[in-house]
Length: 272
Image (spheres, one colour):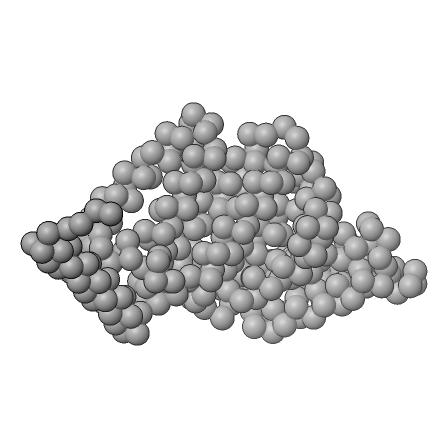
């Protein structure tokens, strides 16, 4: 059995006490920041807050370096390395919504586009959406991030724009028991409760109307006529409310949409 001399035991004991004291004060600092007005670590777990606290002002330099590496990995098509870098960036800057928005769009659109099979495309779309929703849990009051999540659920699953949109919709229902239009409505409506820097409120309100209209058309396409009628009625209600708030209708599209949707509503009522 190996024995230690008294001086060595004293040194080892001192190091252990020093390390435990350091951990105690680090945890105290994290708890203080999380309880204070600084939002940097409010929605973080202690393990996520440690690098933020330790790096201090060097965090920005490291993030810049990681952005450069991320761009290089994307150009080299090393997508899994890119994903790891993305996750690290968001751990270092969790309350910088632009990071979450950019990386989610990069995965859902740019990286998904690089793949030929719908299975691989869907994998990256799903990863991008999960990534963005994790960002929303860290930034629950950021209207821009909330809107972008809703818009991806709306746009990326539109068969007019994307060849495999029907497949994505089926997989979303199968794997997560979610409907893309309901998800789109949920996130876009949530964004209306918070300030948005990238979108005017009137644009977000029109987006809600469009989501309901497209949901109606998709339900009709799927043979779900009762559901299509319900969405059409909700879309009419949203457009009416929109016109009450904005009687001048700056885009000049609300009344034409209302006319079109009312015609569809009558058709659906006859079929139902």
